[in-house]
Structures are given as C-alpha cells and as structure tokens.
Image 1 (tube, rainbow, N blue to C red):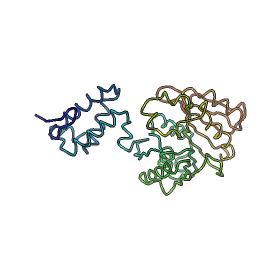
Image 2 (tube, rainbow, N blue to C red):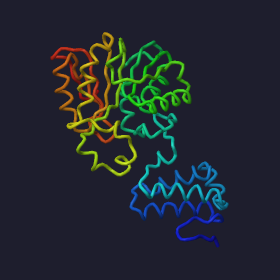
Image 3 (cartoon, rainbow, N blue to C red):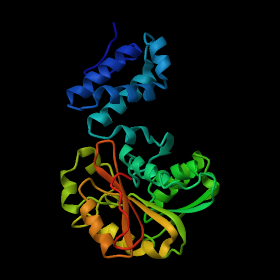
Image 4 (tube, one colour):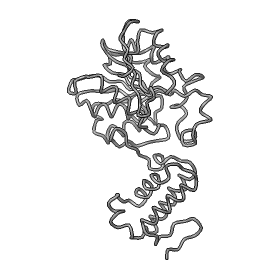
Length: 303
C-alpha cells in the first residue's frame, strides 16, 4: 500500500493511480478541464508517453516523479495554466516555448493562419511577411513553415518576447528566413509587405480585472490591454498598413468576438476595406482580412 503525507503523492504510488489521483485533486478545485490537465501534467512530470502509461501504468512514480508531479499540481491548483507550467505549447502543430512576456498561443489564433493561407497565394512563391506584435512568434513561424520561400519580420515592443520568438524560429527551422526587431507597431518600418498579420491586444482595459484567473494573472498585460474600448491597436495598425502593404497585399488581424462592427467602422475611415471575415470554431467572427479598396469593394462574410 502506498504511503503518503496529507494530499501528497507517495513515491511508490503506481503511475496509473497517480493519474487518477491528480485528476481528482484538480476536479476538487473546480477545474473544468481536470482530467485533461491531469493527464498532460502527469505525462510531462513523469517523462512518459501515452504508450508508456498504458503499458507500464503499474510501475511506481518514484521520488523524483512524485516531487515533480506534486509541484506541477500545486501550480495548477493555484490557477496557473497548464501551458505556463510546461513552458511550451503547440500551435499549428508546431512546438513553441513560452515566456512571461508572451501569450499562450490559442486555437482561436490559428484562424489567422487559416485566413492567410486562404488568400490563395501560391505556396512556393516568394513573399514578404510582417507580424505586428509577434509575441512568441507563433503566427510568423507557422506561416513561414507553410510558405517555404517567404521571408518575414516579427516586431514587438518587448525585448523578452523577441528573444522567445527568435528561439521558436530556431526550433522550428525557419530562423534563416525570419528577423525579429523591437519597435512600436509599424512606425519605423518601410514596406512593401505582401501579407501583414497581427493578434494585437484587443481587450478593453476595464474588462481585464474580470477575466479568468489564468489570463488575468499569467498573461502579460501589454499583450491584453487594448485601451479604453479595446481598439487602440487597431487604430494604429489600420492607419499604418496602407503605406506598408504591397499592391494587392492583405492585412489579416485577429479580433474579439464582438469587434467586427467597430473594426469595419475604423476601416471605413482609412484607405483600407474589410474584404472578408473568417469565423472561429465557435462560430464567432474572429479574423478580418483588409486590403486596398473602394467603398464598393466586395465583402465576403464567409471568407
């Protein structure tokens, strides 16, 4: 019989039982994704694959495994996201290292990559990309992985984020085609760029205090705070993009689920038009594609 102190995990606890106990602990804290979180943290803490756990689930977790899993569970119980505990997360099927200066790449943001690829540009054609507010570099790295002759520039105000993005470009074998620079949006840049992508901060400042603990306490505020109405970054980007885009170029931006109308209004006052909107898996308007166009330019909400 395994020995344990309080809620701790005993070294002689079998792996399969450790997984069950981890899930029960997280569920007891009201964590909705308790089973999945427990599985991810157990495999990572014990250095196992899913096959290892299935075939050798009766082996003990050992002293080091017990200590690592205990520490990981304590962090998750305190509200820290799984991705922060792991220090890495997958996006577009690629691994990305995280840092305190970067957001955790989320599935909704993959909609930006989908929208860019749906522009129909030939895969092998050379093109210039710009990622405004690159963070972990996930958008730029994902697109460079899909477009093998593209080159890209990732810009961010955070030096730490840029170091993280550079590391992610290296680990995903696209660093030779990527450059990362510090700057305030596109103010100091010169085009032309064929595709500009961005997942800018778009949460209204007053709303941040009411966000989930995982976001409010662990995501960098600089990457969340969109100003009083959440639109500050869009005002700058939409004003600068016309001078940065190549003829026929496109600006592809993520937006909040309720920001399509305000973003369209901003575009109406610029030299750009919303040419299409792409929805996420939940059916929310998530990405707007903008380009040069007249007031009568075609608009496809099913882009």
